[in-house]
Length: 567
Image 1 (cartoon, rainbow, N blue to C red):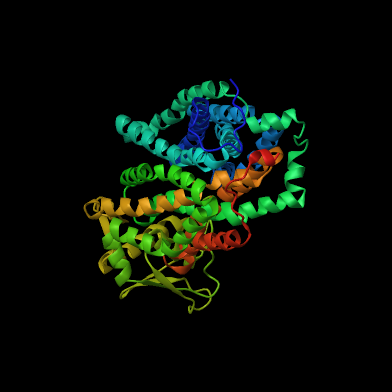
Image 2 (cartoon, helix red, strand yellow):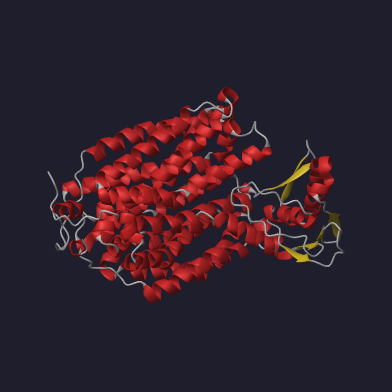
């Protein structure tokens, strides 16, 4: 039975059919995000299976393409499927996206490695990865638009907030599945072939999602528009070629989604990266703590969606941005003291000094992991940054002189990797060991492996305060729910029905795919340039501040918008 248009209706309870619409849209989108996150979580195993046999230049090309598919391709998916959704319909378009996403993910689990089929393996993998990125670019806009066009005007924030839980739930599901399978099979078996199992399990989720979505009807707003002959014949040119609509898209990007994206990535992905790679907490513990924080915080997506139906979308999103701007520095510092207090104390007491020749230090921006920083200064600062050691750079050395690292009374000379040539690997080992020993002697929490004679920076499990870490993570996730919970409702309400799918999808995916996707690499490069593990936080703070200013001045709250008047 078709659902009648609900726009303009007064508050009422959710019908059974509307519950099915939300469940089907949310389940499918959870599945899409689950698929998407698997690649990032299992990147090391995938790299071993598909890329490790090839020369460095070839591996770099594949890494670049995989990165592009993961983040940069998403806006193109928004254009392709947004146009299709505004021409053909919401239901069938986001049925297509889930089929593409699901089949691509399942095939990754079956794809033979490069040891079996050679160069075809990474080529096919990249094609599947690009299909995933394109499908994800079309999925979110379709799901959000479809749900919003079924919702009553005074409950649209609440209805669409269920879609907003899906990215977090997808991440949560992928973490849980990986942890369970890895524990069940053991690390060696998981590394050999067990990493494929999470991809293969997606077939079951795909079947359920497609079955439910096939039973749905087209959205009432789209049906009415088509019956009245008001549909757009050229959604792309109408959405972005006409200034009145292009202006809305630009405001949506810079006044909403750019800031939302950096808060989202900081609170979920960068927090995970910071704990594991900066604070050196073991990966299993980090995944569990993140999963607990996500479980505690996910319900607030719905709460803030519901609240946006009472007080407006804009005040909640802007408040989330403002809180992130003001509190990110103290929160991440608190995270350091809670997760690795020995490192926090050492950072407070001991700074290293890098003395280098002018021009020897570069900005180490490396979003795809393919760039090589070979100067003696870059080798020194990169090593200290990866080991979470604060440092000052002094450019007083004579030109042509290798940089040095001074910790306390000990000084270690760095080297230029290009000049070292065939000896670069040996010099790297010697440099790393010497600086590690200096740091250990100065009081940094490094553990000596007596079998190899090498040191490693670690967080002592006995000193990790799980309640405090989870508490800080929960606050970060709470900010995510504030900026993300109402975002679908306000984006949907900003655009007319005839170009809604296209119009809202592009700014959303540019904001999240580009501003958010580049966050980890940008934060690391900024921190390495300054010698401060917290300095890179200025990137999300600056983007959030830009969005807060533009949003406060130019974005109008859309609460109470009647979609029937926006055909």
